[in-house]
Image (cartoon, rainbow, N blue to C red; front, side):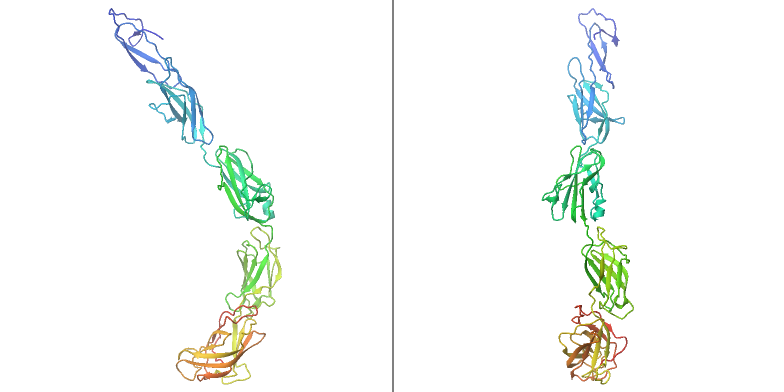
Length: 535
């Protein structure tokens, strides 16, 4: 466009008699926020006639924003602004969200990009539009807003769960076949951009991997599983695998999203160590104990070939003819051992098995392994693990009776145990009475029978003070009363002179070498309930 300059606008030309014309042009830029071209307004000072061309700068157009899934970068492209006499100086870009503008592509009014393309990096998740502003000298011409672009940056592999099998789970046939539909492994998986694939590795104890047909691979194999919905941001998955052989297994899951993020190598989206067990527990041992060494059986330990699930049920157990009339009072489980806690009966002390039996039924509140298989066994006698304990002492039982309370050759001492015991290997022994000080109780030593025996009195010796001792050589040991009683018969005496004692509270600890018929060492201690003068 051309025109004559007059005043502050356009009008008829003014002529000057002079041969020169002085023209001063002042240009003012109007900045528009729409796609209208840039326009200029002029004013002049002086006289004469001239013409001016007004340049038109078009706004950038067709601004298009794109972002690859799973990235935080936006690519922008647009159609260049144009002007008649050459390219614009450059462009700067603004990112708009909820009416707020922010600089984009690393640009600003003073930092421009020269071409009609740029990349906006490290954009936070959200939805945006973009405006491109062309710059020519002091003119700024803005585009209309671009299309809406959404950012959902995703640099992480999908996350997954194993609903079945559970980590630490133990499964019998029924539990395994009801764990997933179809039978096998299953769970859920999610990812911000969508899950494209999932695979499962299954390793049997011993190191072999499932190869899709058998546990025949020495190296790890990931088998493709089925997604509930392909490329969904959250879905289920399943891998069909019929009931495998009884063994412990390790399951690993890896997944890949729609932009390629995935677990690889030793990384897992989910993992579980579980076991398949379809066989009922087998009884390994059944043992009874007298844990407090009081001569009455108080515990039975039932050991199976595998760990047992916790239970306190008494109902499945049947105990008959418990020693001392013991009855079942409680049940506890630790690993593969089930402990039956007995209420000691009111009968006489008895640590022999006798006719005692235990049975386990699977019909009522059964004892189960960790996979749920029920255990049972028929009436079984426990193994004796209860050591014999001394239950009574008596003297003057022999055919020769001398002064009461004075140990003499031929005197006898009967030590009765809670069950039949073995005789020591040597039955002819030397019995010793000794006192280590004038006021200290006399000790009786019967090799192979007593560990210690405190007679509770110091007056067995004629001399009233000091250390004293007497030995009964060629003393003998014998058994009676069903081999529960060991009789000590004193031989000839030597040493310090003895006399009749007033007696005392006798305490005996049996020798551990003294054993019952099952080989259990004698245990505990016995104190006579009152005062007794031995021999």
